[in-house]
Length: 443
Image 1 (cartoon, rainbow, N blue to C red):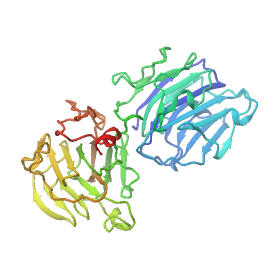
Image 2 (image 1 turned 120 degrees about the vertical axis):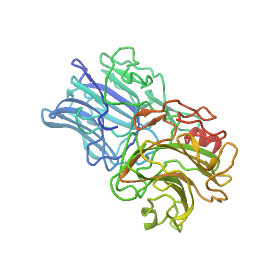
Image 3 (image 1 turned 45 degrees about the vertical axis):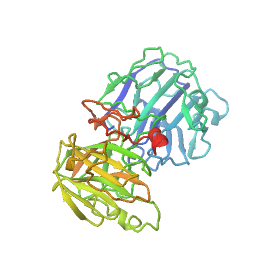
Image 4 (image 1 turned 90 degrees about the vertical axis):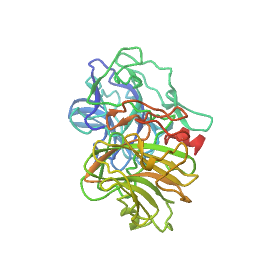
């Protein structure tokens, strides 16, 4: 998240041979070349690092003494904001062949097509004997907006992607949790496993990093991906996303975002906190994604804002406590809600029912566990549904099970029946957090 980063000063690194390997999840794209995954920074004229560019490609870029020393920008675009990626940058400037001096791998495959392609000169010394930053350019600007895990830096040793990852039985690229590598003097392995000390080095070197800002430990991992807010949804052009795409802020008129993962069967639960402002809506929308969809193709999807005000969606409007569906039909009214309140949504896709709750109490004396007194019932879903959130001049933080509202941890963590997630309130019996392992089993 913005203004949160890790740092460590180092003065005796191998400047010709090193490897960076990490898993990351894309956050809100930042304009230009300003979203730094890592950087070795001495000053603006001596630096080298990995950047995720706003047109959604990778950029490994370095400057030595004010002159560009490496410039590799992938032609391939990376637009999956829900899944995790694995990147490896293998550096060995002692190699005789220029293209062997830097190799980039994404999800186990070497990148061979570049829109910019300048390799370092033989035996070049990169400025790795400087401050090693993770998640920023220089501690004051260009912060990483997504998630990072399993960050490896090998000082004096060059490894390819197969050292750090492997394909599972389903041919999915997964991390090796204990790779066989030599880390060298300044090398490190940051698992981010200790929530109270996210900079702890697990390489055996004791090269701990300083955590600057408020870092949060997420349950979202490459092995079990949790939903986030969808910053690529067509009605997000006026929204600001933060906290790993789990917080949205809207400073103008009604705009909405939806969950990155959809639901086509089963029972699902999530929570959202109204952080600032008074105008909030939340609920469920159904969307086929087809150009023939009468409610969500063309301009209509852009007009989605007040959930329950358009088409096939069912929402709760906080300012008046009204429950609305379809073309802004007001079904009934319940409690109002405003900044500071934690709201709950329970969706029973199979039986066409939706419940809403406020601060641990279900509206209309509802009981999702028993299937009684839903706010909406008798719905026949035919397409994928998504949790939806619509602030107007307000901000909301969603907890799909990661255990945080923004950077504030839930006070009394509650898991679902499968053991996944950390929620503020008890998950109704038979309902589950929206994550890939639960979808595989229950969805």
